[in-house]
Length: 163
Image (cartoon, rainbow, N blue to C red; front, side, top):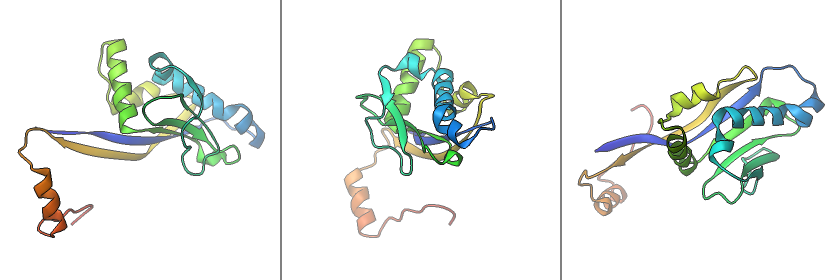
C-alpha cells in the first residue's frame, strides 16, 4: 500500500485592513494570530500557547508556539515588516497531532482542504507558501538497505521536477 500525505506546510496570513506602521506591531499582527487560532480551533485542541520556546522562522522577530510541545508549530511575524505577514508553520508531527485531536474532539476527519475552509476569514487572506508531501510505502517489499546501496552505486536515480 502506498499512502501519500502532507509532511509539513507553511501558511502566510495577510491583513485585509489598511493600517499604519505602528498599528501592525501594536495590534494588527496579534489580531490576525488570535483570529487564526480561534478559527482553526487550535486553542481548544492544545494547551499552553505562549511566547515561542522554539526557533522562529528565518527573518521573523516575534513568535508564539505551544510551550513544551513535542512537535514544531510556530506562528510569527516581523515587528517592522508588515508585508511579510504572519507565518504559520506546521511540522509533519504538528499536522498529524492536530488532525488526530481534531477528529477525536469533533468526531470528524479534517484534511488540508477542509482546514482551509475552516480558517477562511474576512479579516485576512492566506496563501500556502510551502508544502512538502510524502509517500509512505507499507508492505511493498522494499529493502531499504538495498535501495540505499543502489542509489549510492548509481544504479538507481532519483529525479525531482520535470524530466
